[in-house]
Length: 437
Ligand SMILES: Cc1cc2nc3c(=O)[nH]c(=O)nc-3n(C[C@H](O)[C@H](O)[C@H](O)COP(=O)(O)OP(=O)(O)OC[C@H]3O[C@@H](n4cnc5c(N)ncnc54)[C@H](O)[C@@H]3O)c2cc1C
Image (cartoon, rainbow, N blue to C red; front, side, top):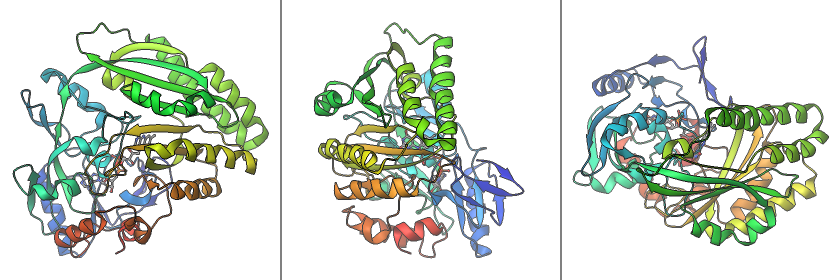
């Protein structure tokens, strides 16, 4: 996210806006004042996190609230593992905040640059068939409603709203505090290994069931999957982290550097993409290490890209993936970014992509300077045919009518929105499209 001349842009440079006003409240009361003032001026108001959504979900045309000065721990209870954070807290700060209490977040996504509120609000998830997304870790929130009132929602107060506000798309109010159910700190043993793609696909269900966390990447134009599998171990386990130099070589030089070279070269001469992808696969993969959970789960992503990701019933991942493979081969496209496949447990959040079903995720990417439209729209048709639900923070073309049929609690969410924000104080164009008004 940068702001030059008052313009806000997201990380992927796929959304931007020049808000009427930018405010940086430092306290929950400051947020409350900002919401009341916005209403008095008839302006919409919106909090942004780290701007890491690819869609326009965070676009704030009226008053943009930046919560970077609202970071940190409000309270922590070692016995219950419950931790309350200020809503603007970035994920990468959380491990150090939890360490004194011997706690950790149960699971994380690929990166840790997001704010806790932004991450939960769009359904950010990692991988692991036994674990839900970040919103599933939420046991309480405090938000400021459109009426300018504080509303506490947890197991004892207004509990019926929790499955909605824990993953609220920024449509129900401004979160000022988020309470998470954490787990005792743990380390992870990780093995990254290239495996023939066909072997991975034919044994996918076993691989997913066998490991606490399993995912794979496939570079189109190769026949190898880069698999990543991890087991959770007690914190007392001896750590064998990747040496700093090894991590740097892998993340900075190879993963990101090779990506950048593949992407840049592929734009000039698309024919270069397949051999470069084969080279990238040769250079990455094959490593084993044990480290703190957050260091194993998250990585750095320095090369800008655009992404679409769909959640499918887990059993549909293999046929859907094969259909995408066939599509790329048939069309003769040169795709410079890998396809990522992950898994998550079902959960009860009304708008969670894993609501009520064990899910697998297929994510497609393109370099940010390449036009993703044709590729993404063709893959989207396959995902929809296999019962897909799009990630709320990643590119897709669905509107409310098509989303309603995919979410059994969709109308309940709309009814709650009507109650909490009847005048659409928190609306923007993306929400108008996906929620229908
Ligand atoms: C490089 C990269 C890697 C990614 N990896 C993953 C991944 O592994 N898994 C995954 O699922 N997703 C992933 N994403 C997507 C990302 O996690 C989500 O889009 C997430 O929402 C971004 O968080 P943010 O803090 O940047 O929120 P923003 O994009 O700034 O905002 C997202 C939404 O949250 C709302 N919001 C923010 N703060 C508040 C608040 N205080 N109160 C109410 N609403 C609020 C905004 O209004 C908006 O609606 C990735 C994105 C990128 C760019």
